[in-house]
Amino acid sequence: MAPTSAPSGPSDVPGVPHGRTALRLEWKFLPREVRALVEDELGSPVVRAESKTSGFTPGFASVLTGADGSQVFVKAASKVAQAEIAASYTEEIRKLVLLGGAIPSPALQWFSKDEAWVLLGFEAVAARQPRRPWRPAELDRALDLAEQIAASTTDLPATLNLEPLVVDLPDLVTGWHHVDPSWPHRTEAAELAASLADVPADRFVHADLRDDNILFATDGRTLACDWNWPALGAVWQDTLDLLISAHGDGLDVDPMLGTRDLTRDVQADHIDAWLAGVCGFMLNASQRPVPPTSPHLRTHNRWTAEAAWSWLARRRGWQT
Image (cartoon, rainbow, N blue to C red; front, side):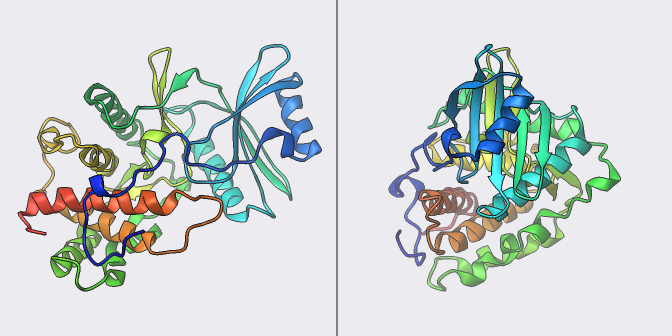
């Protein structure tokens, strides 16, 4: 990984192998009692397991097919060997139960939590993920999804207890403190990121709306997966996250800001503050050791930082 002293642009950072970024547990390696529980819920012995290799976590994630043709998508994590992942799955269960069926997500059909494992069984959706680089029509469909999430979460249960995203992830505000001082316009970028603390953050955001968390279902639905990290934020943040990746893929995304319901009236400085915050957060993250269970995570961090920086610098007229 290149040092963080100077930007190089997203086109000069090796991209991740989209759809093949995760090293996951396989069905045959799950404990016998866990497999038995899943087959009891499915109502049929599992005869095929299709592991989903997108994403950046090592938790079990497979579409399982029973001998009778029934299917379920299962996520599972060990509370002992994968404590952090198991905790995030437990939180996902809590949030999905409270949100009910209003959000555009595959239906949570069952779940199990004991002293050793956390399991979630979802509707198995016949679907594909968006292709990368982004195609304009598929990006439009993903942006529609961001707007659907916002529209379906205007009334939140008080017990959801969401924190502002800048509280959950303080490096969005302070990440630039850990970036090499020779980075061009570092002071201005740090000031912009710090101003995120003053941007209204009172709406539900998915907070992880990437291409690998989006499903284009064959029945016409567009669905979001991985509801581990929802938080309070600016209602347009999920839209901006999608546009950062589209800009990095070479699309001209600035005109889209003026045509989208969630972004057309947003102050330019608020947009730039988010770009600066994401860039600083991802630059800081990219300097950490590569997790052995997620070999592509730091490449993803650096690429996203470069995409956010490239767009921010263009908007601000910075020569870098």
